[in-house]
Length: 386
Image (cartoon, rainbow, N blue to C red; front, side, top):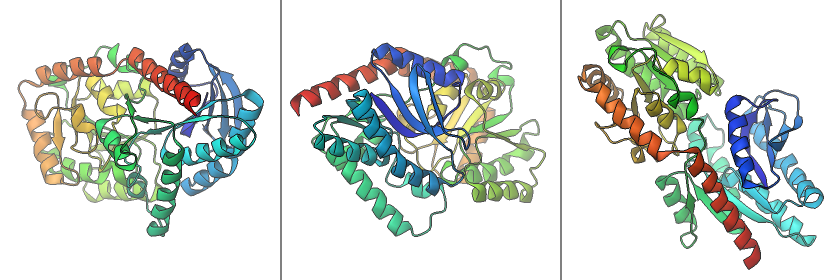
């Protein structure tokens, strides 16, 4: 069984990835992973699974090209040398690579089943993520890749109702297995808050610095509220993935006079992120689109108030005014008013308790592994029916 996608992995694996792949080892199959290293040096090592990691080139277009050039040969080598029979693609775009390897392997008498996953809005999310030249050409190429992947997919997986509905628009007659993406909930669930949420004032944003995450909207809203809540500080946590956008929001911070009220932290692991969450009052995710972001569940597990955009799968986990707050994207005035409601809420402890109870019921490590058991069973059945 081989996973192919764009995550970055360190050697050795960080604690969160180590736990994830240790749990998936319960599937009882030999596992391979094709992804990216955290650096320019390729990696090949074993830790629960065999990891074949391409160099992390600095530009996303180059990483896409690198994956599309090298991954088909790696997959074919794994199929022919290690008898891989199931490919799990992390998106329809990697799915097109898996489809190519599947069809070439068939010429050599090898039958392979392809699982295509969707973790977000693959039709528009990439275009909202960064500045893209020749958007029409880019969208045409993405649609062709997704079409080829879905045409050859044997099993489909979605992480939310919204991603399931999107897949069903492409393949209306094919069933979809649905379960949430991985998160190491123990890093957030099994810790005591440093400050009771009713006595905390800080706000956390957790997500890569890309236009789709709406950090510019959050900054505009925070600028309206900051004079009213002098104790509040905004921590922007996430990898500066888009250099142009990162420079823009940093300049925006200065223009708004928030240099002493906003800190850009950069990328952190989940254990470090938990420390910020456990002393904050709220987490804000002002995204334009998402799949079902695990950070929402992590925030709920941490016992803070989650304020997030009413997009994609987010309304599936937040009940507005009960377990958190939902906002329209790119509406800083409404977000500012929501921040005021959050600070003024006299029953904020009850809200966070309800949110945590929901999160504990919604995601579990057992359900995650069982989800992949269902995918593997579906792949085995598809191979028998082929």
